Length: 237
Image 1 (tube, helix red, strand yellow):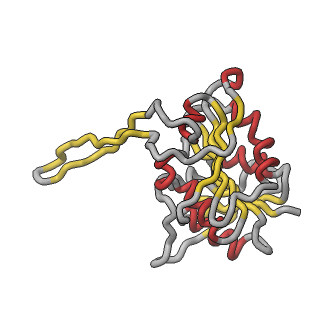
Image 2: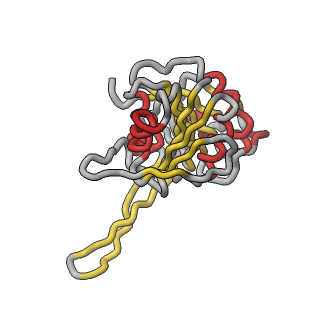
Image 3: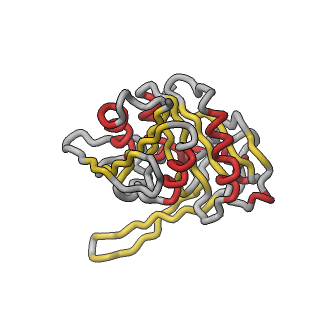
């Protein structure tokens, strides 16, 4: 039986992880090792100078072996692969992230970072993300189909499958676009608001404005046009 390790960066009790663990259960034996709280935008960072802890967690998904961890998402993959899952997992699923992970913003993503760690461990890996909304109709319709398809396809050495679901109603979804390239553009155009808090000290708060233009053939263009985007990603050549 396939052993599937599920992780994320939104926290072990996040809605997206629970939905992904439920879907994964149709394809094999599911193990979950995920952060005990929010760990977004920590990319591929791992813990080296101190120990990390993991403990059993009670997820509302029958048959799933679940552990919370106080490390990063990449830490979760490392201890899951090397220590927790008996015989190592055959696949790693990362997500379902609340918010797209595409275009050049993928470099900051801990959802992608966890997936890349699994790929570096030689494990077939899929990252899943969706719009930062409560509209899950497209994800719910296509998630199992895409899992079934990609489980049989290799993304290549040190590469991951990266899937992004648009946040539109199912009736407005245009379908699935495969072989999407990672856009070199940014999804969020960031700037910082400044607030003087005391003499010589300033607080900076990041603000991101969504981008609505992108080149054809890219992951960003696909989701802007209400398609499910499926493509490969790598952070080393």
